Length: 173
Image (cartoon, rainbow, N blue to C red; front, side, top):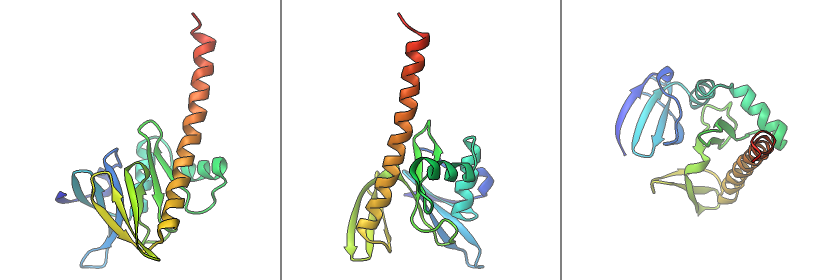
């Protein structure tokens, strides 16, 4: 990956190429976000949660609304996967409490594999075969990814059921 550029938060929205949001501190101790995309890496001003919150708004919702939706549908109260855009299939998973400045966020659709490095360290391999190492057990990560996939499935199922009803009701041959 190339093209490391510092981008003001208001100018970056998560998109289908966004794979992960990683917190980092600059030389002055200011918290920023390293954005991993399929073909480039960006440095964005602000915390990863700020990027998530901004992107929810960009696609027409709010972070709180997305969090409440996951809680209502899945019964998830903490570390819920967040839908950035249903239409684009963008779901992000917090690897710890989103309120922690150290929280890494990963895109469910870009996780290709999780490999155990030790009992409490794993590599997350992304769709472009790059990886990050995180301090979590493989089973813990896989449970979070599975939960996000299940949430995505339930939302798609509900939408498709309504589309079918609508199509049969208004467009009968």
